[in-house]
Length: 330
Image (cartoon, rainbow, N blue to C red):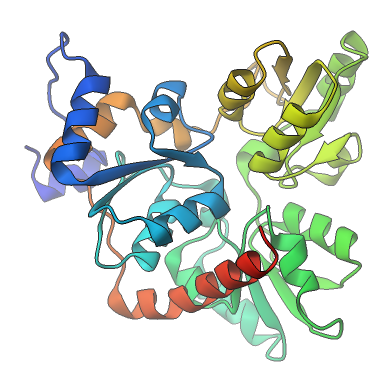
């Protein structure tokens, strides 16, 4: 077993695994033994999605983390998601297969700088996108996800002054949808920032019947081309309910696994980024592997902790989001 220092340096338990082990079977055994639940984001590897007890987007994962009876939550996602689970279930043990599964969007908004930014607008309500650190949530009035951002802004009186962070692209889309004037923090997700409008245009020409669907974290130039814009769950539902047989998908390509499972006769094409790769993967999400998940559950580490004072402060805006979402039936 690695020392705490080694664990923090590497980010994961580094042990040899017997190559003959059936990891799916072993993980199922450990889950029963430890009363554990595995929550996985849509952007995880297909193997992890297939072993998970619940797969979802940030809103669904937050709701599940708040209601689970399990004693241990293994969060197959990125660091801020595991933190959110810990904030909502402080008495539970929350594990993350790799502590270095971070988030470029969360990194783009350091809390000490956001605090100064917030001080410039003392009469503004602060809405932060869930893709941020626990410290940033603690500086917020309401948290939102891409599923409920529009409805949360619309739930506030029209004359409410609002700061929206950290994602400027999601914020700009929400401002456009709601007609509200939002003060935006200049942050972005590297996965959604690098889609190539030019390559997507060529792809659409090659697939004239394909629907182009995009996540609102994409840049405005990409969103302008979309037939549908929505959260990962929104994109999944749209592709299932649509009569179209082909879809070009502008979000992290992990979601395509669920799209194909739900729609085996339809074709899903990942939208190309402006680099040499054919599809757009989040390097942080992909740090989690089935092997790391197994070792994390077996050893009960790495564990994600959040300071008690931050839990108290960050819980209020998350609970406000969950209350508004429940009232709206989201």
